[in-house]
Length: 343
Ligand code: AQP
Image 1 (tube, helix red, strand yellow):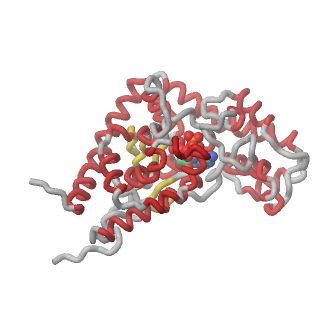
Image 2 (tube, rainbow, N blue to C red):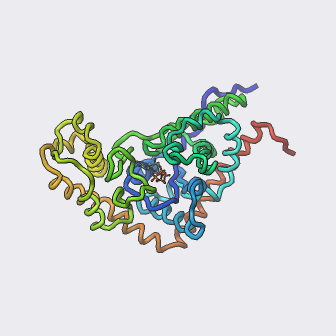
Image 3 (cartoon, rainbow, N blue to C red):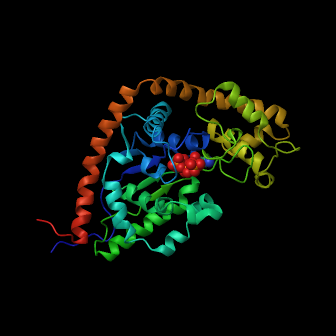
């Protein structure tokens, strides 16, 4: 009898996704897309457009396919290369929903009850939220594990969900006596840009669903909009500090310095060294220029892709075929492991 390996010993694979639930912002770019690009040369990468996640809150049916193409356009404009990485829409691959059901029977209510993102999104209205929104992290585990994803580049807000994915993988392997069948996926979070905050409130994250457009820099904003939003960004009456301890006490300032560091590729300490003692009258225009320099090329390319539906559709269709080829046999093995009847 052959020994089953105790820990996953298969190939490494990077998996991540973005929801087609609105215009992408600087946080999505720095927390996710930029990392996708840096990983694609060295790793086997699968980048999904997670439309099944998007419908956990209402999406206008007349808009969903267009939004999906927009996210694909953003991936491509940011530098994701479909010759190197698989790009596809989640709803095209049935493995996601099938595996999510199996994982619903593995995950525990207590685990999901601890998820802070659901609590944040539901607020006082949890009774009125869809079951899908509550179950979102289980579908996320299925997304990753349908590909035996080993590494998941995401922003800091996804840390708890990734821990749940690991718990589900471990419990499945254990419950079904299938040691090492699923990897325990590792989050790739660290680095500048992991948590970009709202320009209006340094204690809440920059988010697509924030009602104030001034809270975020959208990847579709032009140079004037970017400069105006940064000029209006909340700060305080002080100057840029010269040390990390003081910076940590000033969330809005810390956010702007963090954005500068992430976009320029410098450390926050270097940014402080350069701007310590200067007021925001000097720092904000420098940050606006840097942001425009980094974002404008992406915005321009996005515009080109947004008007090239056929090209995008061909990339997504090819990606879906390639994704299906990987995920289908993995989910078929899961069925065997669970012990379903088959001929
Ligand atoms: N503020 C952020 N800073 C760094 N990373 C971020 N991400 C999101 N916001 C920030 C990362 O972007 C990826 C895609 O996110 P998503 O669209 O799938 O869902 P989300 O995390 O719920 O993003 P939003 O923009 O905040 O949308 P809403 O408002 O709909 O909730 C993920 O890797 C995420 O970590």
